[in-house]
Each structure stands twice: as C-alpha cells, then as structure tokens.
Image: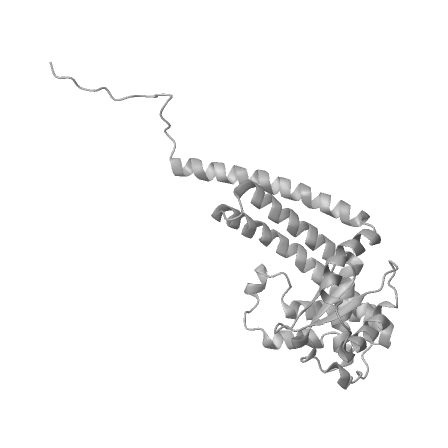
Length: 270
C-alpha cells in the first residue's frame, strides 16, 4: 500500500500569519510603547526644567565655561559683551550675567548654552550690517534663556539618546530609525521655541532702541541665502525664514512698534 501524507489542518504549532506582517506588528507595538515612554519622560523634563535652580544651571554651565572662558577677551568680544549687557542688563532677571563668546566657524549661526553662555560664530558677525541686526541675534538667544529652551532641548535630547541606546544599542540600525522618527516630533517643538524667541527679541530691541528697526534683517539675509525651499524646513529645527519674518512683522503691528534709523555697526565688531 502506498503511503500518502495527510495535509495538516489547523495545527496550533504552525502560524497562518505572514512572518513579515508579524514583524511589522511587533515593531509598531514596540515603537508605540517607546513613544508613550518618551512623551512621559518629556513631561518629566519639563517639570524638572521649570524647577531647576540657577545655581545648578550655573554648575552645568561650568563645563562650557572651562572651554570658552580661556585667556583674555578680544576687543570684539568685549564690545559684544557690552551690547549683550545693554540688552539683558548687567544681570538678568534670574540674577546671573550672560556671557558671549566668539567662535571661529563657517556657519552663520549662534547658540545658547547652559549657564548663560552665548556662542556667536564669526561667520555671522561678518554678515550683519547694523548694530540692530546683531542685537536681534543676541536678543533671540536671550529669548531662549527666558523660556529655558536651552535646558529643555538639552534634557529632551538626552532622554531621546538614552532611551534609543538602552533599547536598541548604540550602533543599531533600528536605533537610528527610532531616533529619526522621534527627532521629527522634536522638530515641531523646536520650531515653536524659535518663534517665541523671535518675538522676545523684538521686545528687547524695542526696550533698548525705542524702535524695532533691524528685527527682520538677519532673517532676510538667511532667506536670500536659502536654497532648500519651504519643504525642507518641515524636518528642520528652525522654521522657514519667510514664515518667521511674517510672524515678526505681524507682531510688530500688533504691538504698534515703530521703525526708525538703524545704528551703524561699530568697526570693532569686524
């Protein structure tokens, strides 16, 4: 008699689902759980930042001070410090003095760091054409300090990095995918911070000069140099320059701020 094997039906040891489908279901579930954890930790960061004492932030800033507070300040840095003090006062509302450092870098940019440190790249200084324009850049960074954006960004970035590394490993491709996914969420948060810092900078210009001339000059320069277009800014930490300019102009109108003659840039800045 010839043996004919019987086809198995409904065997509990054999899955009828596609392995690929199961993989994506599991991956989606894992990412969903991690996203919930990330959001929860993000709220925790917000809570900690709002209660972080100036003394502890000064301690964090010590790591940056050791790097940038070396040697005698150049005449350019001393003049920038004077301008920053005029905008913020010798001491800010939180009782600390903000410090500016000129860094040699080809990018036209600036940054706010914990402890009241502001970095200005020398390429940026070479681009500005008036004191008002330079003041707006400094005031924008002061706006980040007022909103504690520098600490929020530092804390949220640290949470993102630790979470992805702890789950997937440092060099995992899945870790890279997870990081990119959450960074897209972070982008929208960062863009809102930038817009708030812009409006804070406008208020500081008004307080220093009695007008807001030069408030959009730097962004106009950035917009002229931009070759990426609006779509690329969907994934950028800064909003599209034209959108920032529009928001500033609308705010100026709403506050009834005026435009007057701008102050020439001191040659010492060069």
